[in-house]
Length: 74
Ligand SMILES: [Zn+2]
Image 1: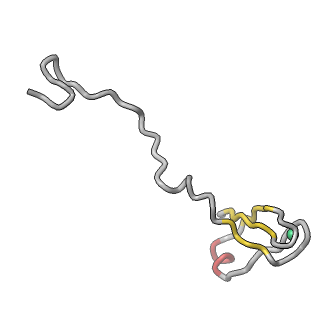
Image 2: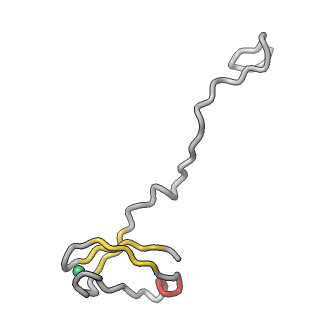
Image 3: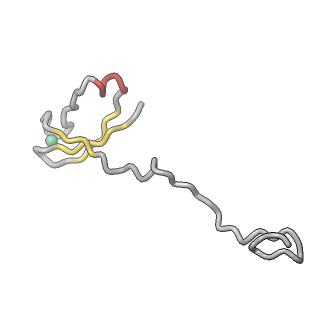
């Protein structure tokens, strides 16, 4: 199940809630586990993990033979 991050408006505590997508689609806000308030805001800040983090190795130019340079063969 996905985890959602919330911040409580009342006590300004950050907390994580795990709930199923169907629960989320109902638009239900969780209660703050610290003060019990329902006035919580979902945090949507941490999307860096999802947006194309490719760990490409730094490769040196491919040379296929002694007469070939980094711009190609010939
Ligand atoms: Zn709270």
